[in-house]
Amino acid sequence: DPIFSGNGIYSRSLLRALLATQQPLLVLCAHPASAAHPPGTIHHAPPPPSCLPKHPSSHPQATILAVSLPTWFSTDIDSAWKVFAGADWQSRPELAAFDTELLLGVDWHAAELRLRLLAASKKNYQMLRAEVPFVYSVARVYAAMQGIAATDLKKYMAMESNAVEAAWQSGGGVKCLTAADEKLLLEDVAAIVSPPAGRSDHVIRILPPLRGDLHELALRYARQDGGDWDSGRQFLVSVVRLAPEKNVERFVEVIEALGAEALRAAGVVPVLAGAAGLDVERAAAWRARVRAVCGEECIVEEKFLGPERMAEVMRGGLLNFHGAMYEAYGMTIVEASAFGCPSLVNVEGIGATQLLSDGMVVKVEMDDREKVVAMVRRLLIGDGRAMLREVAQRAKSKALSWDETAFASKTMAYLDDIYERSLKG
Image 1 (cartoon, rainbow, N blue to C red):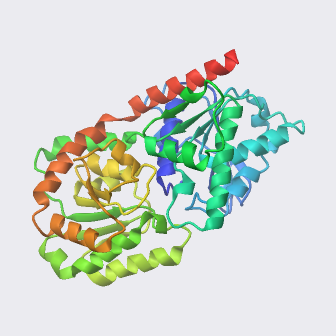
Image 2: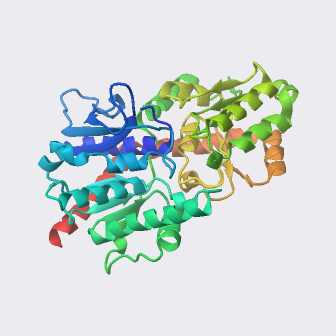
């Protein structure tokens, strides 16, 4: 905490699935440093309340160790991943005492930590055996992000290739969110790393689920709201981490192009919500530009929205604007749909469209400013409200259909299969 990206939401869905098995579990994670926990220190952390079972009689057998990081709000190459991987994990007796049978790691950061644990184990710190299957769970293909420097691209390709290779060498597997990410990772980024013979079925695609708390809120509000879609909807929403790869610039440009008068006349209130990435000044500038256009007739929130606030915003959403050119998934697109708020997304490269297919989102070429402005003007100010209503109705039931129960069942079946195969060699 605080969660600031879809990676965190996805990781907690994985944690809930694992906790529900009642199997012994050791979690290595991170959180922001504080006076009580300086950077680089490791301490016990309780399971997040949202991950605990509903029935108090169930007691998850989980030990959670968290390392404190000096910087937060980023998972990319500029994050504190080296502090995470290089922390003094070998000083923790919990690792030596835990008989690891399978290692599940989210993104390339986990593969880097695995290397450090293996190196320490060779020095008589018995924390991890090389033959323990490693499942590389890909929340995002970082090498596919837009606008990254050539030097960073080279680093991402190397680290993501190393993670794939670690999965193959250990008898583990690769778990992607979508077919697009699987292709990007295995055919482009890590093309030089081929799976061993007979291991092609160790790759699986499992879409992230709609998180449980929002699923429950969406069902509750659906019963309250009835079938009147238009009632109370007024927001043009952007709910993403305020970072360049999310293309927040395009959302701000749309607000500037439409102008306060036209938005007011159409009864539209812009909402820009999300924590800043590492570039705090740029995020502040985006917020200031929206306020400069709309004054008090907009909502600007400088944090990641919790479930109740997300539900409140999306229940009032006419249109969720998701400007990213590439998105491994884009969980807020599905979350918006669960509350009847349709999304405008790029014509390609958006993972959530694997679930919300044609007719369940509105697509536009996000790299063409004029086309984007024209589309938003038509949808909100012109004759597009009927279209939005139809898209919202189609998308809502689909968004609610893939929940954490279905996700947990498919994920655990895959992990069980990987483990059983490792026993057979």
